Amino acid sequence: MSSTLSDVFISHPIHIPLSNLPDVKSLPDSYTWTSKDDLLFSASSSSDESLPFIDLSDPHVATLVGNACSTWGAFQITNHGVPLRLLDDIEFLTGSLFRLPVQQKLKAARSENGVSGYGVARIASFFNKQMWSEGFTVIGSPLHDFRKLWPNHHLKYCEIIEEYEEHMQKLAAKLMWLALGSLGVEEEEIKWAEHTSDFQGTQAAIQLNHYPICPEPERAMGLAAHTDSTLMTILYQNNTAGLQVFRDSVGWVTVPPVPGSLVVNVGDLLHILTNGIFLSVLHRARVNCIRSRFSTAYLWGPPSDLMISPLPKLVNHQSPLYPSLTWKQYLATKATHFNQSLSIIRNYLSSDQIS
Ligand SMILES: O=C(O)CCC(=O)C(=O)O
Ligand SMILES: [Fe+2]
Image (cartoon, protein in one colour):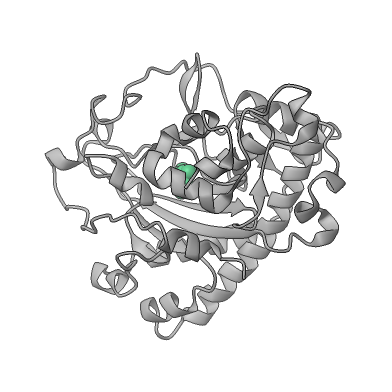
């Protein structure tokens, strides 16, 4: 029987402490970041570069998406077909959840080796300092957790998640095909992802993030630099800036929130699938002292037991840069090697060597 995304995380638990964000006037040492805690913490940024902004109704959309994936590994989109009302709903849900009293949120706390629920970011265990954020992960049905949070109103919130997932899955598939189409890849080359297959077995998680107002934002970190272990991630951010993407020779670039738009990140698996042509973008979230910030990430991946390997068409007589491996194997590598995972697997000759 094929395993689910939850099984993958359960078999590779990351033990992370759950602590409340302190209500303080100055930042405690445990939340104060320097370049010692994250090499790129203070990397300078040049201000005149900005992330591509793509109108999905543009006649050259595939080329624009393909270029953005191979230069930045990320882009913003408009005219994406997701109803603005649904984006308002998901923002309302995210805000309502994080505004609950902490005791209420803790009723749906992620268990020690669990995957869904309330807690700090999974990447927390890779850093010595704490991040100025709280999160909530939804994998599969949120009913069980939402009932604990909102005993009387959980159904309406479950409906929002369900509708959001439906739209996001369709959009993710459309974007992936636009991107791959720009490289000349045809649907028959990836059977599981063919439009007609209805993406049987693709898996996803929804990550809700909250970055509260912070007394000393320059010294704090909302969510530390990471790449996503997905094929693609679609991110909705409320109207408060904080997301930054990293581009070599440019540095950190802030992605300004544009009402109604979405941000798309190439994840590590799409980087592998395209033999390194599309870049999986390093990104992070900073915080501020004026407004709290919410974001909703739709983390989209393939069936977790399916072998992913560089597409033969994109390897062109050379050896592939990456071995074949399943999402499950990749997550296991990521749980140990975090941001070094891609370079670690590049050095393996065959997936047999990946635990
Ligand atoms: O909050 C953001 O802008 C980034 C969130 C993110 O990168 C994630 O949830 O993986
Ligand atoms: Fe991310």
